[in-house]
Length: 318
Image (cartoon, rainbow, N blue to C red; front, side, top):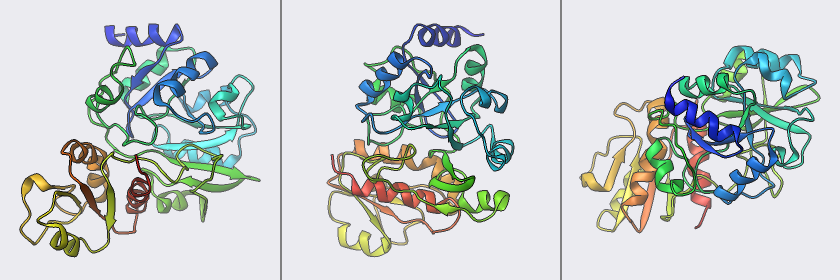
């Protein structure tokens, strides 16, 4: 094991937190069995205790250590998509502290695909609870630099695993009487899930007590005022002479200064746009615009997930 991973193992074992890379976003991780360590996550992020965390495990073989009464359809999903950006909400075992699950009797679990975090998990004798490594409600981090900028003075170590491949959070699926429910759209599209298990019910918004992470209406937001546009050409025309930045999915066919826009993909590729979205939002936020306007994505595939993130960012005011 390399020196940095050894350091991470030591910090986590003594009950402290470490920022870890995943294929979705960077996470702020602690021993999922240690409620004192988990409290540090909530304190550092200023995350409300009613918002549960996701537990990251090393492999599908470890699932029985943290969850019980696992429906066959959940095992099918795990075998199909793990390691990968799918979180399953399952009945928890008693070894998972209530603080992880916000007092609920279910826990969100996934196997992350990032090789660095996989190696770390295989060196630990406990799983890692880890929400995104950012202040609560702000843009999720997809590079170590994002984490350093937002939380660097509050954590001892950031494992640098490069830019996150998927760029948006995991898809979350729970179960009601063994019937699958989509709690959060994410890096795996609804269509891809349904190709595996059939039609799935959607329940991806919550009030004060969410059933799974990532269900709050206000989330993923820059500090700059943020709007979503379905008519981006008109938005550019109206605001071209103002201190406004644009996040674009399609190349502008009007004159637009390079410093005022970021094109998320050259060829309208939704996966590429997902990889680049949060990094672009961070860059735009740093430019101190009066307003950021994002072009709405096509409502297909993970475009649905991307629009979900834009909508929640728009609803948040810092």
